[in-house]
Length: 287
Image 1 (cartoon, helix red, strand yellow):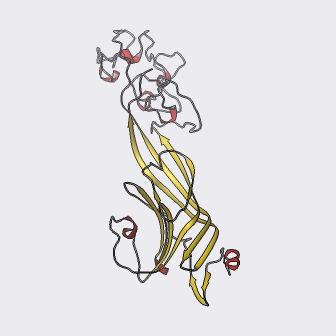
Image 2 (spheres, one colour; image 1 turned 60 degrees about the vertical axis):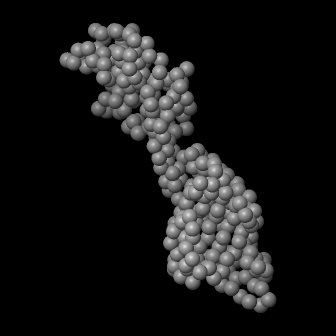
Image 3 (cartoon, helix red, strand yellow; image 1 turned 135 degrees about the horizontal axis):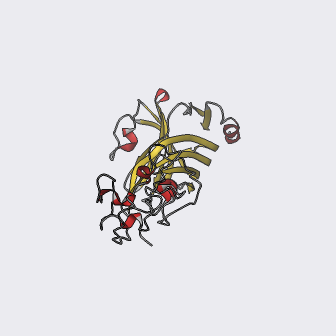
């Protein structure tokens, strides 16, 4: 009987047997969305098929952050810390069933298959973006100012304490080059070419834009006639956007309910977009 289950698992239904009893389930989650809940020490990934009042869920016990970097994790199911549940209910359920600190008493569970054997495969794809308007290669290791933040998510690519977005000018495809030295301002440590680093023309602060000797010309870092130097070897606070998408699947999953057993060689639970979408704030160390 178990061989039959494995061979026909790709169809929309399967059967399990126990002393002649036959249980038929739809196991059709293709049209439902993968969802996630995060607690203090665990994550729950789940799909709800409201039409069939059934769900499948994975609980992973960990305090680690799972979505902050691209990775592929293989998580061994053990029936306690990391466990899959396939359930039928006597009524419809909502996300509150999985995301509430105390699960509701209704609807009632009419069948519960526990996956204590197999491997969950969680793929996380993370995107970092400084939103500066530049089209940049996320696979590049370029870090112009060597501040530990790669250019594609560095708020200030050249480390002069003027954000890249403000140094590009009106056309990011033709970035501004104030001193005409062939180096665009957003990559030029001395934007006006007066021999004083832009970072040192902030009047002792961390924002060169606000230090203005001649309002008719603009900030001192763009005024070659002003070269007052106050050495500041410190970076301003940076922000960037972190967004993560995930894919979840199982390999060698065995679901049991008493003496009934269902074996799934592979099961793809699909993907969830923007499971993590947050602004990261960091102040790079000056080296």
